[in-house]
Image 1: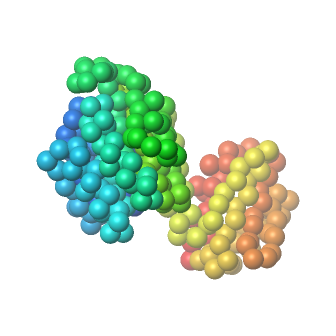
Image 2 (image 1 turned 180 degrees about the vertical axis):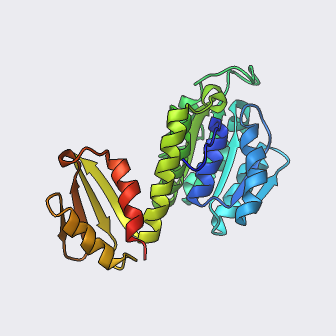
Amino acid sequence: MDQVVLMQGNEACVEGAIAAGMRLFAGYPITPSTEIAELSAYRLPQVGGKFIQMEDEIASIACAIGGSVAGVKSMTATSGPGFSLKQENLGYACLAEIPLVVVDVQRMGPSTGMPTSPSQGDVMMARWGTHGDHPIIVISPSSVTEAYYQTIRAFNLSERYRTPVIFLMDEIIDRFGTPPEEVELLWRLAKVRAVCRKLRIRRINVRAGMIRITFAEHSEVNGEALVKMAEKNSRYMKLEPGREMALLFRTSSLEIEPLDWLEKNLVKLIK
C-alpha cells in the first residue's frame, strides 16, 4: 500500500459522493450527520465544488434540488427530525424527476429523540414519508466500505432513473472505523479503478476462476504490450475481436488472486 486511510462512515460517504461527481452539498448541521457537512465544506473546494450551509433543513433540500436542476450533482444530509422536514421537497423532486441524493444518518426517535443513540427507525418514512403515490430508491450500507461504494451507486441510480435516492445510514455506521484489511482492499481497488478509467475499460467480470476484461471500442491501450501479454499467457488468455475487445484470463490455472493479477498487469497496458 502507498497510503493507509482510516475513516468513519460519514467520511466514506463524502469521499464516495465526490468520486461519483458531487459538486454541491447543501445542508444544515444535525447530529449524527454533521461530519458529512464538515468534510464536504473542506473537500468540495479542492475539487471545484461548492458547500452551502442553509438556514434550515427545508432550505437545504431546496438548494440541492436547485443545484441539480442547474446540472450539478447535488447531495444533502440530515437525521431523524430533519428528514421529516425535507419530505415535501423530496416529494417535489420525485414529481419533477430531479436526480438527488438525500443522506439520512438515522438516530433514536421519535421527534428530537436521542441524538447520539443508534436507530433504524426511518425505514418506513423513507418509503412512505412524502404524501402521494411515488416510487423511491433507498440504499442502506452495512459497513464503512459499503458507505463509500454504495454512495457512488446512489448517485448513478439517481442519474439513471431521474429520481431522488435516499441513503440510509445510522449512528453505528457513522462512528465505525474501518478495519485495516478493509482499508487495504479499498485502496487496492481504488488504484485498479483509476487504471481502468485511463484504459477506458468498460467492465470487469470475475466468475468461475476467470477474469473477463471488456475494453471500449476506442480504448487507449498499448497494443504491443497487450500482444505480448497474450503471447506470454497464451494458455490462459485469448482475445475476442469485434465491436468490444474482451480478454479472458483463467485464474484457476495459476496460483494468483484476481485482484493481484489486475494490479500487476493492467498498468502494463497504459500507453
